[in-house]
Image (tube, rainbow, N blue to C red; front, side):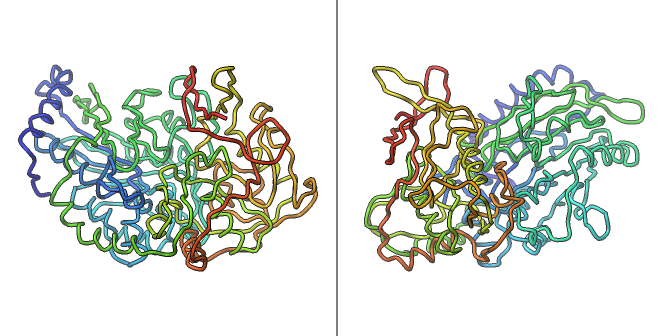
Length: 572
């Protein structure tokens, strides 16, 4: 890899930091010990440049900033430095989607990773979003292996990707095993993973770790796992995500030294869990995990003598100017495409408060889904709190991609009224009570364990959410076309393919009969709908509201705040 030209002050700061970080290990750096440094990123989601093209604003993370940190560490090291990634690379930014998917060009993210010098990457679930052809094209482009031991070719019964990589790090043999969350079928269309099945991660690890230890004679076994933790790291108590997260179970597999995780977008500093070194960096290239290992002789090989590590934020680091220059032309083309107007809007549109009160932005998604499918009911959520505000005037593709940030398609399924209520009750877990005082009024407490993009609402019904009721009994006053909802009544409900597959833990949908499927992504359907409605007159029909009173209308949701117990809240 080429040398980076950094400002002298930045070099001094980074080298000073590295001296401080390494000083405890240096006490043990006898001549017999060998140092190996692991650097790790995960869930890059196409964040090549320090700019959010959907929001038209700077971004705190980028691969160009990762490049600066990585090169500084390499420059100051006289020992092997291995740069690794845990997947979810090929989806998540307009730059990646337009270049790789829309224009059929090589992946900018993979090109950047090649130039920075990544050694291996675990396959993530979002790698399957655009189908196997694009995934295999990116794999062919990469100068490093895509690892996934538990993605199995149904025809051969063997891994569909290389299961592991062995690297000679000086005299130390490092085995790197790749694993993916097995819940891909819970999120993806079957066509996107046709011919593949996904084994439980811990089951696969127990098969392959002995191969690395015994047959490959590896001194150090590192697992690149596209998964989070299904248990609290302090107590070991399950958190209800065991269908997709396997980190805790993997930490109990004998023979693993280092477990580098992702998927959950958490920021987990390196720590020892069940005797395994575990960590996770924040998503979108905002953090680089660094783990320094001092290896001591042990028989015919080496074993960990001491280690330390930390997660390094990159937001205050200047990006690699050479990399930024390489991608400047494609970013300029992207800017022109995103600024293309689709329609005009007559009123301001904002997503603020959309989880506390029905709003025009989410109702736009409902309108698109209902018109495209001819369904009775629509299920959707606000996917991004960072969707830019719209002022009266042009509506561009940039705003559409900021509103609908995932490459989902649609499915319509058959459900009963009782099942619709169960689906809404699952969403209503987000609303966890009221905190009232004479001076400030009432505040809705919300459940931080419920991901914001999993707080769905339904269009086509009128209903009220009472946050003071017990979980499972918060959805009240359900009415369909002015009449009380009949629990046995059949409905055609449209939602995105992630939700239809049971994504977010929603009940009934994955078992329901599919009666319609779209071939076009939702973002494209939104653009098509807006182009046919010029101008767009944004409205919210107020069909649902949060409150204790059984009267129609909407609540007066105010800005999010924090209470004395630091639980997420919103004033009413």
